[in-house]
Image (tube, rainbow, N blue to C red; front, top):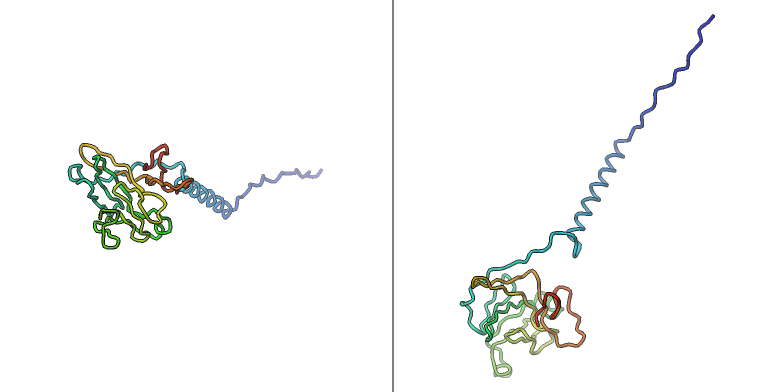
Length: 196
């Protein structure tokens, strides 16, 4: 009798994943994760860490004279002591949108005259370099094309030291009916209290 062949099954085939496919899938996952993290921290109001107030040590309270502003040009604000004793921190950026976008500043003028006489009976005013808007020592708009008073920052006094919280800009008051305050500052009367 002869020999009967026995069928031997072939070994199971292993599925081979192409290396290029694995590399591409890994690259897509890494890129997607990086993009998601970036959006979380960059997107307005995103889930990033809350912004801590930036307190700038300025000066001591007794160093101020009423009605004489100190300009902190590198920080972008004036500090002025009012007759009431209150300290105001006023932004030196023009409030008129066209001039603000150009980086136009507001300066303190001790010699503001019209027709050879002090403006409105006094010579000391804040004045927009580009817009010509004029503001009183409280930052209120007196004349010019500006839509509102000077914007400002919260002032904190601790142990007789003066600090300015520059993390949130407070909008100056506008007397224009139905005025729409810009998004970059907090309007007067808002929850966190803009300038009134």
